[in-house]
Length: 159
Image (cartoon, rainbow, N blue to C red; front, side, top):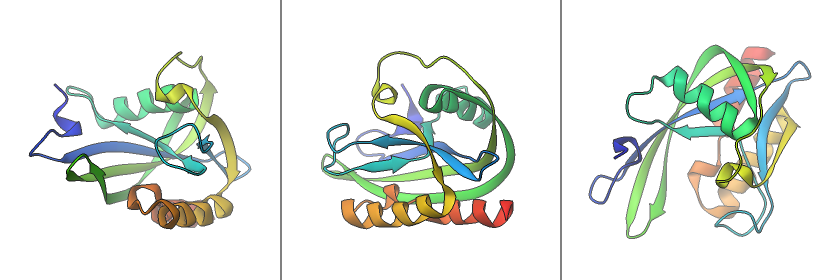
């Protein structure tokens, strides 16, 4: 059982996120078309991975970057967290995501199958992704789709 993803009566979720920024100040993200996820409309998300029992934060981040972006990364800074809320059945889930500013190191083969196999990996300009994140949070009515706060912190750190 993964106690980090919550259960009925205990709707709390813990994830680790990575803002992976390359030398062009572009952010690695997944772009899902309108037909590739449960919502209607395009969606851009940075790497967010649910922790697994027994994993460290660093192990979760490494696994998530490999599975979702096909990358190994180097953690540069902890840039804070976002607490968001979304519906799962009849409950509202409280999701806390711890975010890290990272640099890409090398590409790794993607694992086949799963949600991470949908969408495309893209590198988007940081300023554009900040605005897109704000728009999609409003469009979908889901605050977990607006990661602009941590993207703005990353922008301040890298100048």
